[in-house]
Image (cartoon, rainbow, N blue to C red; front, side, top):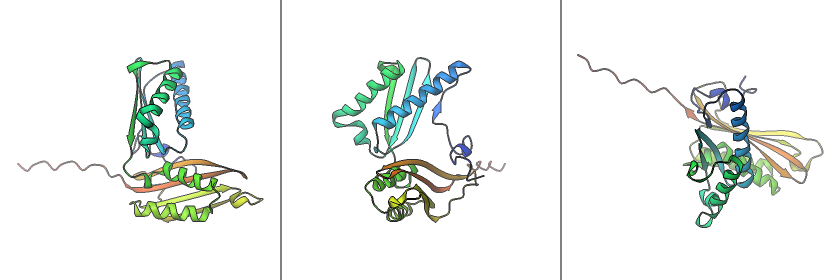
Length: 221
């Protein structure tokens, strides 16, 4: 089961939170869902290799808040805020919400070395520069383990090293318990565009267990 279910979707409502927070029914739900997909596609296309890990969207009546969690806030913001202002103008044109009703927040993540999306983007970028996949995976695993990850697994699939036949290679260190619901597993999938074709990169990062908070013991009478 752990191989067939998305590791984050498998834990939604238990230890993971939704990236889109709003409520709608019927045709309104479909319209807002398609709108969220277009917003994420626009941001991903504009901020390629900018280390954007999460795009959280929160909707209110006639208002929307977008929160970008990134490892490179300087690239997202740009010089004197030029990049983030241009991105906000594109989002206003896409959503039809202008002015203060559209809020765009940029948040810097604490430890990008153990963020699955940042690791996957780094691996894909090096594969596009024709670095050996074994060396790339080994370096990424070493950095993640030094940064405090409990376990990490990286898989690359495609025409690796320009081979005629596509194959799949993976490397792992530590524990990656995919079936344990309390295990904080971060997952990401990125494609590397090489001259030989697309190479898929998948990353699983185990950050430890999320245990329920213990209730404080009531004082004895």
